[in-house]
Length: 226
Image (cartoon, rainbow, N blue to C red):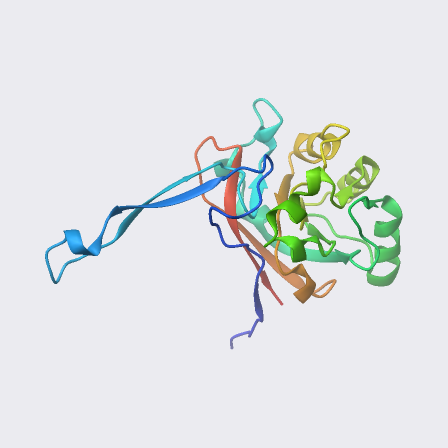
């Protein structure tokens, strides 16, 4: 007997136009060899990729902020393929919105306590701005997560935390959520797409990074199964 899932792609496509933390071009795709250069019938197009590790829909491993912490290649599949909950704050989120613990408390009253080893996604609706680089970056004004909220989730022993903005931290007061989540040997996922298509519970998530040895960050293919 097989089980049918609805598959949702939560990943933005990579291109030279996408938003990046510093506002520059973070991704380059070039042609190394083209069809016309080959001998028919065996003709190929080969390409080269140049990019930052923290580009597009990507994840941060603990080693991103913790010297000696786990790197991308050391993250285990049991944490990367797991249950997922989606906390929707899109109706109230704006550029200055900060997600506080009360949001989690409200969610748990409705859906039950978040279980250990769950991937938690905050859906703010900010991904609607993805195709407008300046609007998405917005001088680093976008919905973010409060340190107290990260600490609350760590008490639930989550697998990782994800958000549909450039970062869980805006950087204006440093990066306390990064330090808390990654410092607790969990992972962060940023620039999530299409989270609006997910229910609050009953989701399986597959956080699939390029398996880079000693990598502190990596682009991912993020997939949800409903």
